[in-house]
Image 1 (cartoon, rainbow, N blue to C red):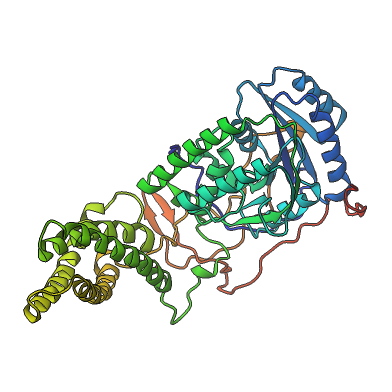
Image 2: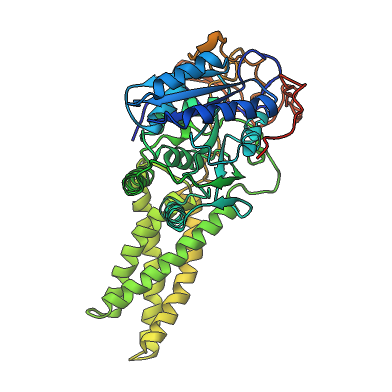
Length: 502
């Protein structure tokens, strides 16, 4: 996986400030490969729709990745005829590579892309980017699998799409509904930090980006879309599915080993109610209890299965000790990652050692229960043994949670075991959005009017020669809580024509 150093942690979300009418607010990228027939109608239709219905400045960028037909000539002709259209040529194939290249160089604060076949109805474009403009969300995706979506496509593609998303939910715990719809948008400040971690350059690019964003705690907005399948699509289903499954395995392995620096993507401050100091609400306790109960239930089933297996060739005490030892190691590892949110390998050996001490206490409880049962009955039934062990494990589980929370994974920083407190280098004079390098059309890079005022929650302190300050979400310089959103006025307020006719 990529471990490139990121440009920095993300700033708080803001409504894009008014002004800078000459700089596009939205950059819509159309990645193409040998699309000489569809490119012209697609761009003309998209431009017409944006010209009539989109109230902000925009740009359409054609990203030609190594086409061998006349697609580059068509792109250049469109660029010459339409002021809002720009073309970009890459000498290597790969939709992900094209998107990464153009998005990384664009100066627009909102970046989007759509497939050249325009299978998705364009009336969903404004709902797609509006939450990003307002600062409500970090990414937005069109979903063909939402209940209110209207989709026309064959049974084979429907089955493949739903199966793929079920695989993502089962293997990577993805909660978004549609990873493959070619209709997505992202804030540029998010893209600058997230894209260096995305390794894939092909069709899996979307999925990897969404999974990493979701795991980092970013907000993904979903828009139900009207979508009509393109029967002339050039996508090779088998090859694409194979590459996607390889990508799922690679990303799943990286997430399991903690090799991805997702803490770089988490926002250091923002309007997040979880960051607020609310009295009498123990942070993280409810989530930890739920996670611990789920892990504990699965561990108990695993333990009973192992006990029944070991009991076939050993006595009850030996079978209990072996089953408890194996399940305890698995239980500690699962609680470390899922319940208490500890990522990476740091401290893993110490945590397992402490977990074994907790295991010893559980062993004493269960072994003592078995000893008492054998003292009361010389030949107890197997079902009776299991019932006694279940009761003993319930008592051991309560004690295990308390020891895990207070000793093995203590809440040293008051975050309830979660990695929700992020320290960010704060420079009040720096703009919210970094300056881009894409200057097609002579536009100046997007510059906002300035960041929101922030007051440190604690005195600043130095780390490696850099002053670092901890911030609390939504707090203004005078200590009050207020809505600091800035309204973005339309660039062309006279555009009041109805939507795109069908």
